Image (cartoon, rainbow, N blue to C red; front, side, top):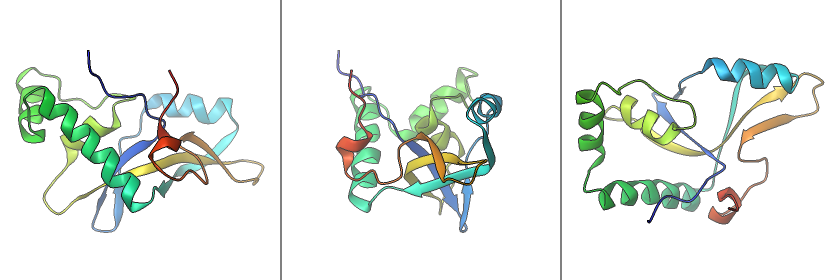
Length: 136
């Protein structure tokens, strides 16, 4: 069965210069365990990587015979419209409005000791699609 590769990266929406991204309770646990502080920190992947990652997810939907709009309509009809952890691309589809920009890259939080960012998804100097693909 063809499926999406496992990725270590994050999708979010940029709307009117602001980031739109669902915050989950599980993030509080991640922050506590890893001694992190503050709001989420985002770092966009390079343009080519973003385009490829977005295209990869769109092609996956197309293989299922669905457009992004059809997928969202399906989720609404089935009552599965709520955002879910570890499903950032589809969470973005549920939130996406005209004029929004879909973004892909790294996301994490600042370390309390001030030594930098701890990346929950992605990494500081990750470059190229292969950097964001997990080994199975």
